[in-house]
Length: 613
Ligand code: GCB
Image 1 (cartoon, rainbow, N blue to C red):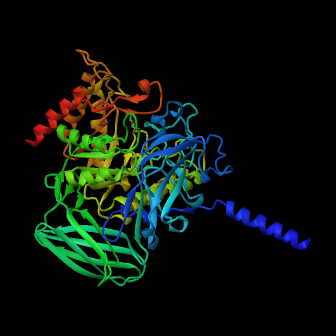
Image 2: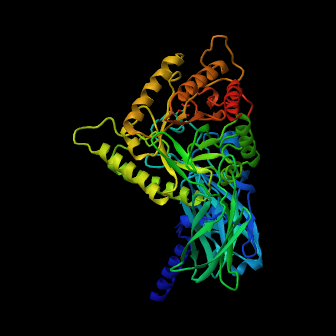
Image 3: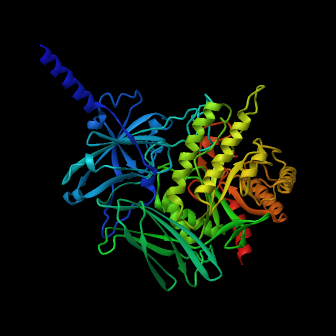
């Protein structure tokens, strides 16, 4: 009897153990290097059409959907579910994705990873029904070692559970309004919006991270390179090639880290006029090549003085746009023709820069910007920090702000096109404080620490946040550049462009006198319904949009401390429904959502191209 009970207890414990859903957290270090294929590494893209199933009642785990989805429909990966399914436009809950992939026998001797380009806004992963790991936060990739769960020389099932719930204390934060489906002015697309890859790295040891910090003096360039490995190989080498030179250096690892300074003769600097890229190849191992990884990067510096932003010690002026990842049919899903077209259109209009509002974009944007010479302000998802008004919330938001900022810097640090990190959009302190409430001071401290942390992680770039007119202006203290979004002539002083522009002009003068930092007009614009015209410009016409942009740009020309004008927005984009968003779109685009030019695009082209000539 005792024996039988013990056996039952044991069997029960084993079955509980088998069903236990334990997920390890994604290690940010695993996303530092984009997977690549070479002599020692394999790479396979597994995006395509996957199985998909909604789980509004959150019963999938209990019913073990990770053992195979039944009654599924098909979905494209990458792509947002909101655009692909008419019955899921506003769906903000759990869903399941599944695909299979053949894993060759020869991968048995390697470490196999899965890299999910992003899943908005949180995900859990199973392989062949076994738990793998989880990640919170959209817009950045996450990666796991899946070797222990794989069947080699066989098909393997990959299951990903994704949810898109916005609430207090999350990032981006939600739950402020019971009316809107999100409290953001962009559509909260859900799904796996970027490519998914399987890749291998050598078992023995592999290159985990490479950081290249460039600088120069006269014609002499310098790259400080830091290589981190997983494993304990002692020797390796680095080869920097470009501009007719090839520099080879041996490296020595201590506790998995190697640091070296590499001098580059006749350095060819990276700039918008000459976006020159060097190749940096790192090899692990002395006689035998255990692992290798190549990346392309440029030599350039970024700094500021009281009035200007300097690239390679020369002033630059940003002419560009705030952009979204948004397009009909696939929502936020990556689509390379859109990336290429957008940069062609930015070239056509004479722009030299863009800002990734309000989250890190797909890596291809930065790869292409590096090659084409665009200057990028890369932004973290810390949009709408409205809830900085109680201690518990500040604490949880601080954790998320730091996590996303660190993941962004880790992934994107070697792109010469990125000159500045955008760390928050419209952060607000508590304006409804009761006596004795210290949340204002706590909010500022959290914010200042967060900005400083980014500077410590990457001292080679500038940091900024986007300051709303209702936000605390003294927080500019902790930014390198004062970045304003202003909608005078639109939300304020509506219809009265000149009066509105005069207000901003006065505000800018005051801010500059106080902070002595360069300023960027980082968001301004007016909605224009494509094809709407009026002889006397009326709001919502293309003519009014042109007049407003003209007035802001003329004002900016007369202030030597303005280092850039970035229009809101490059293209019309989908947002949540509201009485100021006709048909659920923000029409402040200079191009339509399908990339046709409005009158403002031709106005900008005339202005910006003539500047160049
Ligand atoms: C802003 C916000 C942006 C909006 C824009 C607008 O200040 O930063 O999210 O889309 O205004 O068009 O209202």
